[in-house]
Amino acid sequence: MLLVLLAIFGFLLSPADAVGGEPGPASAPPPASWVTWHTAHFFTACNGNCAVSLFGGPQVLTPMADIFYNSPSAPWDWKWGNAGLAGAAISRRLLTLWQALNIEPEIGVAKRFGDMHADEGWLAIYFRWIRFPWNRILRTSIAVSLGFSYAADLPPGSHGAHLLNYFSPEVTFALPNHPRYELLVQFHHRSNLWIGKAADPGWQYLTVGLRCRF
Image 1: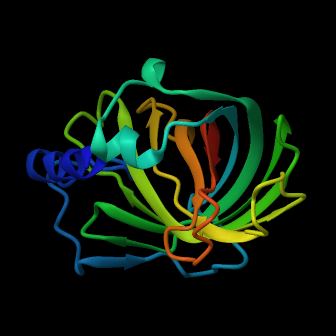
Image 2: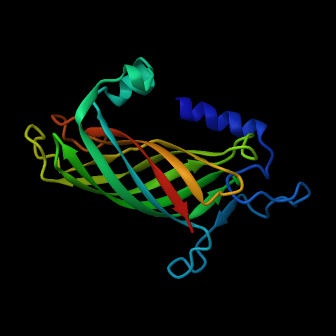
């Protein structure tokens, strides 16, 4: 809910050139279309549309529904587990809608340590809102993902739930003079949201990392 409110706020207050792409002049003409495709030379040249992310963080035991919906709370009020996660991902911007919403496929891998030793891989689509009125001071994006996560070496009690949904909301920050480098804060989450493994609640981690776009 908080991510949705921020996106609406940014869309209403920000000028068209204060978005997550390179800022243009105030007199720049409006785009010819409401959709911009970034598919030219898709498999050969990135032209700033590709990104590599490295991140890690501790396990969160408080359910996502409680954190974001039922009884919103700050991280210091959450319950924490004795496991951690380190991961990496590669993504590529596919298209931009209304100069405000990027759609980005992503593939990633992660390793759990501590009380968990499972390996995870995922394939997802991220929907990233990039239009905020303060982007000339601090470039910001918020995103949510829809995809699938496959885990191996599951811990006891996982009920064989190797394949689950991947839903990982995130927020990023970058300096206007260095837009290629983003601070990434992500709620790394896999669960049975759509896939029928009702006995397994999934796992989640609060991760922080760095994303480099190229």
